[in-house]
Image 1: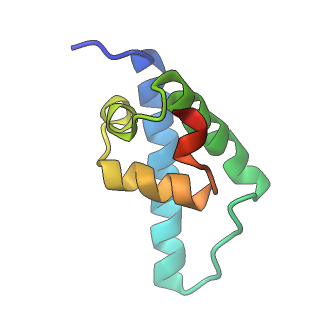
Image 2: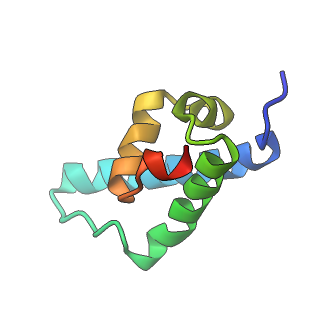
Image 3: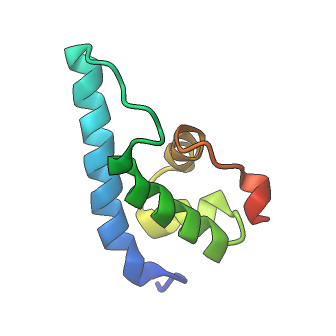
Length: 88
C-alpha cells in the first residue's frame, strides 16, 4: 500500500522514535524535559509540519505514514506547539 509522502516515513519514524525514547528515558531519570523550541527538536518539528501540510492536517494520514498511533501524533502536535487548524 502506498501513501503520499511514504518515502519520508521511515526516516521520520526513526527520528520520532528516537525522540520518544529520549523523552521516556528523561521521565524515568526524573530529568527536566527540554522546551519544545529546543534546537535539537527543530528538525522533527519541521518534518511533522511538512507532513501535516502535505496531508491537509489529517492526523490519521500522518500517523499511517509514520506507522504510529494518532494519539502519538497529537502529542507531537501539542509538544511542538502546532495548530492543526493552520494545516486545514
